[in-house]
Length: 155
Image (cartoon, rainbow, N blue to C red; front, side, top):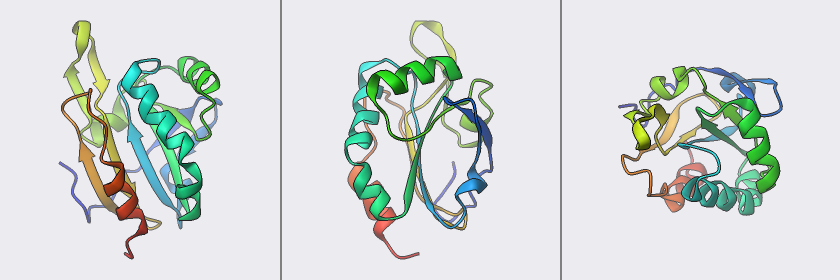
């Protein structure tokens, strides 16, 4: 499993806006990377809406939130629009990034294979992981207090 102090795996994904987004685009800025199983599900909606409602806190600490799931860019665009999410949602449809971050269920509910686990990573402006939490139970939420503490802590 990726640990605090490890270099974060680089990635390039397409956003719900159909634009390429790279981790390196946020060099010099903190990144909160949130993997979530599936758009439009109750726990994922609650998680991402909580981040939406608290975005001023993260922006105040120079942090960019990025949500990642294996949903298509089209599904993510509809989800983002309906929930008024104010941060990018990235499609890991090919599962490469979820795999690199060790945040992928081999089998999820209803026999679906290759769904992102719920996970939270804080990556500092130099690309170093400052917080890592990968949950086995998709019904649980990341520890947002720990995420905030990792962002606020001096590197």
